[in-house]
Length: 162
Figure 1 (tube, rainbow, N blue to C red):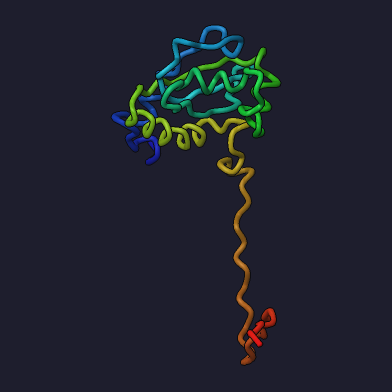
Figure 2 (figure 1 turned 120 degrees about the vertical axis):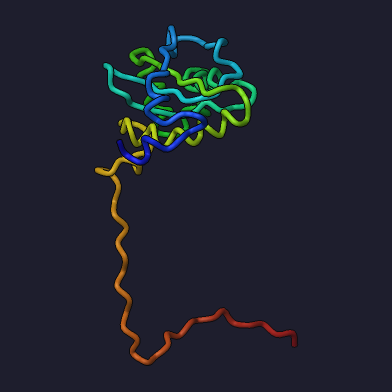
């Protein structure tokens, strides 16, 4: 078992959270009032493949608000790549939620679970920088050798009162 699978998120390890995903009837076809005030994670599947994982941690609307962001008239939930993908494929997607709770502690747990879940499932649409095959290694530039001369820095002219 890997270290990140044993780390606790709330009172459970990642492997204990995994079987708790629940399918949302009617997915993104309509507003889900039963998910108001419930916070946690959502994942969308296309042909059985996890395409995106995100959190629904809004204090008032919880998961219901987050999922409705993808289908309502306003474009606010689609200002980013994942939101556009979910909106464009909403009729073909299966939605599952992982309810963590309904208080501020649950919001912290849900936010803490997102990264390990993304790392575990490697969803196609969510945060490409978390996928090792897409991440670019940061190149360290070699230091220039000191040649005994300090570079000159051009300053803007100083205006003095006459």
